[in-house]
Amino acid sequence: MSEVHVCAILTPAAGKESRLREMLSDLTVKVKQHESDVPKYQLFEQYDSKTGTNVFVVEEIYKNQAALDAHFKTEYFQELGKAIPAEELLAAPLNIMTIKPIAGFASR
Image (cartoon, rainbow, N blue to C red; front, side, top):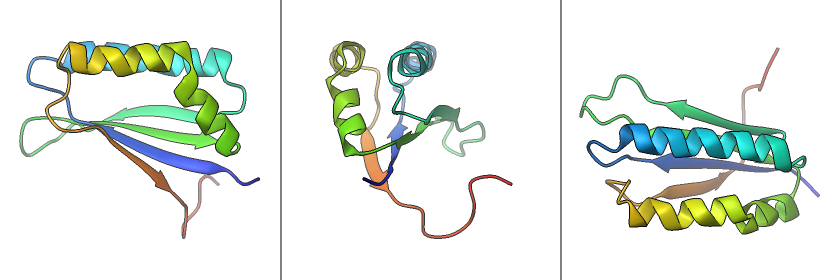
């Protein structure tokens, strides 16, 4: 089985940036603690948006499709999936993309 690369983009609603940052940061800790088949789960924040709304980007690598499927089924991911709409944290739909590297390098 080959690795599965994912990129998730979240656009916070006005005034909800801190709450969304907190929830996503907490998620990264839980993934590190509980999901050994996830070698990379890194949260980024855009810092120079021309619109004034920075977005959050989560770069993820799973050892295989089963690891990604298991991630979506974790209790903490399910809870986050319920909290985001309940707290109206997003200004745009969540964008989760399965991607594949086609050029370049990951590290030196």
